[in-house]
Image (cartoon, rainbow, N blue to C red):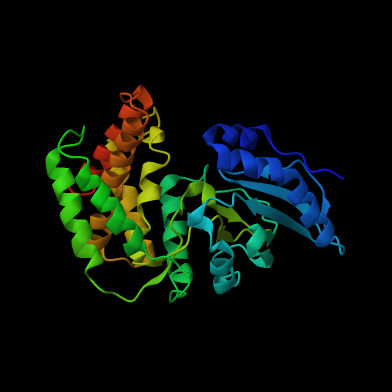
Length: 310
């Protein structure tokens, strides 16, 4: 028996020796899991940025998804714990886990995802999931604060030579520190909840997948729903301006999720400026200037920062 690794996942070998080592081990690891868990692959393997997904059936013929994640991805370290905590309420159901091998057996979700759903409707769906996912946090999870505190320090260390209005950088630094000092009771935060990470089950109910779970403020969540699918806000079918489209999405998320508008807005500002800063960091580490697509991404970050505040 063999499990084919998708070419798109094999391309991650270029990211470094740790990726190459994992990819070298992955075919055998996938076969071991399939055999030990008495699974049968039934379709071509799929992949995310850092995971292999093998469509399988169990001995009873029940469909599932065997997911094996890159062992160097710290953000998804406790994916299984979060899925277990949710218990199929608002997120895909976990059937089995091997944390040491970063392997999960999940319910099979036939889809579709939210990528082709009207963006405002999609935001209402995601906002409706917030209340189901934002349960009291598990002690094992890394905190939003631990990540953001470090990221703010890195942003501050970039200095004034950033292609971002200085007022937004200063605002993000100030807001971020205020948000972290709030001391609210943490909940389980999905961390990467966007159109592609919500799929329909067989009954048509929407469920979250691929969490990067943390313990923190639920108002941290909305930003990915704004920065994804921005191209359609400028296309021939766009209604109104980019600003109008972004604000429609933002308010749909806030209203459906029962979030505090001001606090959600502050987190969007912080996350978008941090995203712009990371792009600059990546270019500096590579000792090069910004590529055209990176400049476009920074422009997008600034547009969202501006839109939610105007």
